[in-house]
Amino acid sequence: MSILAKIFTWWNGATIGTSLWSSRFGEHVGTDSFGNKYYRSAKLKTTQGYERRWVIYSGPNDASNVPAEWFGWLHHNVEGLPESHLPPPRIWEVDFTPNATGTGHAYRPQGALERGGQRARATGDYEAWSPDA
Image (cartoon, rainbow, N blue to C red; front, top):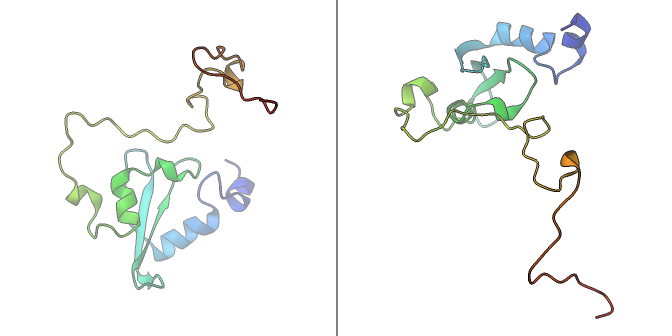
């Protein structure tokens, strides 16, 4: 990524200002499986008196890339780090996948414009409404 993109765009990752602020005031507390880095600052408090917690994404800024355990930590639902409070994974649990909306992997039902826009005609007891009836 170019230096101008790092200075002026916030949607492609952390800006230079965010990186400098994080290195000066933040304490790196962990990294998730996607490479997102999590920080906290006990010195700087929120208006409710909590320590500040934030994430620097490894790719584009997309909140759906934060796993549930780190989401809970960011929103002060758990005090300790997620690794210390997680139960063992269940056999039926699947791996986390980020939100695919707006990507090529998004679900597109039959009749969607991206799939040609052709839908099967309605059959059975469906009857279209007519204002004359």
